[in-house]
Image (cartoon, rainbow over all chains, first blue to last red; front, side, top):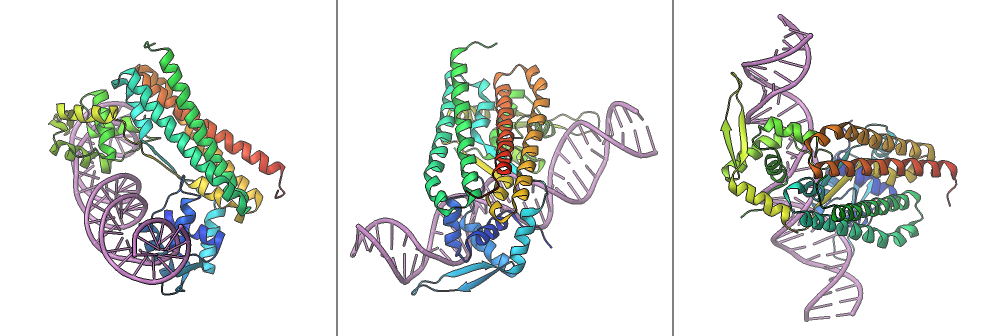
Length: 181
Length: 181
DNA sequence: GAAGGCATGTAAATCGTTACATGATTTA
DNA sequence: TAAATCATGTAACGATTTACATGCCTTC
């Protein structure tokens, strides 16, 4: 019983949530929901679906639409079981952050103060933009009447809003006390 | 003039900040400062230092200590320039998050409510632990008398504390209103 | 003399993005 | 008929972790 990989947990979850889907449809769902904390590219999705099929966790079914080839994937019983086992398990939850803004800010002693404040301003804008994008998604998620995707989205909005506000506050403080303590 | 890679920005920055260092020392510094928003492993640091030397951005100098081989690296003028150019540039700031806790939470409609609350509790603990670890670092960063590393650290603490509090609040709300709206 | 820290590095495996290629269908 | 969208996929490249291997020095 091998561990589920990064992308496979997402794929199984999406199929669990939405039933039979193509790789293309899964990608669209991801881009409108988990992308901000769990992205996935076509270059991972298609190979991973095949691999999952080989492992017997999903089953693919050709269903061309007109002359256009399509392959619908669905969970197998084993796939459903593996997903639910992961979901209910209490193993360590991985958490990875890579934030170029913070990296620049970390090194900003090497920068004139106004440049450091500019970096904060870019960071603030970035998070404002992310929060705004998530807010746009909200009505659509609300329509699905799923409780947890909505709560997740709201957490994302809150997180980015918090981050943006923190950048604004730091910029103010730096602007007011330009002297080194 | 090729773009600096992910790890190279970190390495150049550390050498800029601290002067001549070995790969080993850089790794230790990273683990005590940028790790929570910009990690790096030995498996990246050593090859990357070599590559940077080939590119002329750092210069390595063998300085064995006793019979133990050591290689101290320092910025070259070109390296300093490349680093400062990146630092002052206003290109898009990359931001990547991968949060397994949020992924589980997103799918938690498939889970009994108490299990969903357990997931939140693991997430809360995780962030409490991260905040606690960063708080331990604070006195040491304070000693360096560098302004921005300290502000960065405090941002990290604030972020994880916020995240933890959010998890606690969600858990309370879910516990109080177990019915679907 | 053993354990732990200092120090360097490689190999294998994974992971992931990006860019490219292809072609059908739908809509303006 | 052109553009957008649906749909699948591969190739190349780069990033990254993990595990392994080696050996010295210091401290208990």
